[in-house]
Length: 219
Image (cartoon, rainbow, N blue to C red; front, top):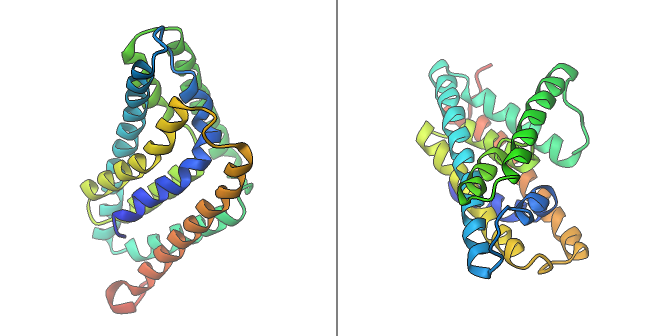
């Protein structure tokens, strides 16, 4: 999977991020409300998110390399592509109960830690809030991680996720500096395009899986 798709997925998905991560980004703690200070805190916050994405990408890249060694990466690519298409078209499909409950507890722990950091007024808290926010559930982050899982190497996976994070950066910084730069109505019109691109990514993964080893899939 080409690295540029990571940046493009992040850029298109960033309009979805406004609704999910926007309230946190707009509430980054700090006494100084000047434009320069707000930009600095925004960069720290988003750097934390991007660092987490790159870290998760590296970890999943190692798992993907294991699938390659075992000879199952083509099957993994097809299955992940199918899941991406399904969840993009039917976003309200629920995960199995046990997994959902376990992740719910993890999510509660993360949000509690973020709430504690909001009480601090230091620059480092902005970075740490972004670092933790990178672990919160987001459909487009999961889509990007699925692609990272079937890239060539762990470093390639990490770079893919870093580019995904960088793709979200322009819109997230703009929102931090000018909260009303894009209306709710415009955001609603743009959101389907990110879903369409997620479907394309899923189909590319399916095609990639079938084309491995000269177009032969070994089950």
